[in-house]
Image (cartoon, rainbow, N blue to C red; front, side, top):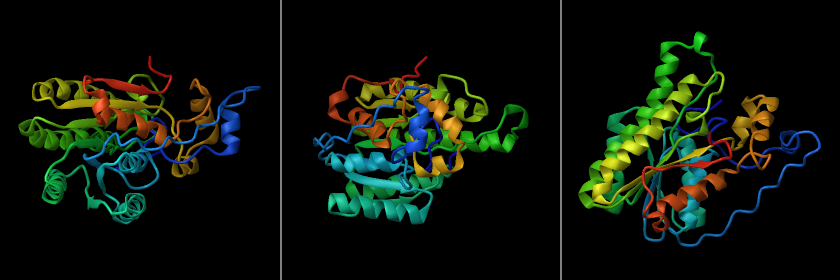
Length: 291
């Protein structure tokens, strides 16, 4: 189960590796899971670009993406609603980049805070080349037990929050006739999962938003794509989730293991880079669970 803005549920991803016991269980009887490779070195894919990552605190895909962007030579801006963790994330990225990145606290449910975030980016750096929308909120409750508030909260953060940030970015990028947006969707936007009706609906909405925004932005040369991860492990997820459930999710994957957060981040970096200039409106599955 995830946490507001910074978190990615069992279908969006996280940080570090799965524990040895869970990894062993995930591949099924008599089958050893494949071991994750080492992260590749930076290749300057984003050199000279200003990259903003929302929900970049904590230990999930957001932080992994901000870290990868810095490794690829970008000037990074990080945002999150959790001030303490945001500061810690900025400090860690500063150790890599040699300079602490701009860090702006922002709750994506607030249009005013979204506006202040983008104002801070442009006041500090003069432009924005890449927006990575990572903020999301999930949960685990069956539809018959779900309240209107639970439904609305998940959609407000995960779908409407993505829309708010996308809208703010496009209002700047379209006149400049340059820019890239990468959204974090989920394979749950394609397939069914018990207890995830609100989250699945929100992520399916992110996919549709991505495609529609891409068509509107294409005449200005602005690209909008999304990644759709499945299970990626991090300490918080391992702590609050049932181990058998996580093992079952991992068993569905071709590699018999969860993704590492950096494995999602490298795909995001590709979509943000000039190596994907003819891709827009695409939902890239970072999983073997595409229907």
